[in-house]
Length: 297
Image (cartoon, rainbow, N blue to C red; front, side, top):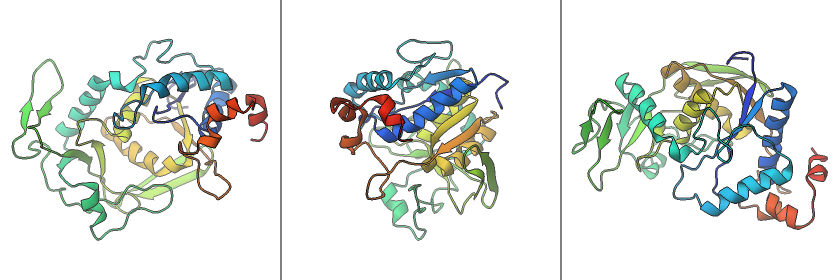
């Protein structure tokens, strides 16, 4: 175990819809790992996506998790020593990490839209990871000078930030070491390896709407909350390779990883929040019991 001998796991739902049975199965794996190790389970509310986040889903998330039988020792509802546990309240942590990456030239400003990248010659990555391979259009840009018109604010009492004039759009993209093999041992799938620049390309760590991307926020929070094992879905295996690079760049120790098989519907499609019929809320209204649902796993 990488973060000392004490186990600390986590559940990290995003309030962009009702939790479904696939979420529950993955979270239950994390729950059982924490219990088996006599450790702690932390609940983190990943509420950074302002375009999709709705307040009604936060209360529903807590209610549905409790109904299913989950217990956590730290979280947005009960607090704890590693708070705050709402990502929207942790922006200073993310800005400090971005400044560390920028100062060391691990990132560069990118003005490309997703449509620009998809129109380039290299195809998106296949399978469950759908982030397009970045063609390197902006790779030569310096991390010190993002785009014309942006002023760097280097106040001594806070992380450096760029003041963006209205209408200015750019993201910060992490420069991957092309050709390097990133490998790790997954607790469920065994040895995994991905080639940087081939299996995944330069990736966004800070979005054009001035919000940290999932990869950066996840790494910063898991390190700050002293998570010893990350349990999540198999669709994030490639993201683990990206995040290992961020751990290294930020001089942090990565946790162990356990990726769960994805739950799929009758047609073979993986469950998503659009599958209302399999949401915990809907199943509960139909009289299903958590014990009965878990018995099929």
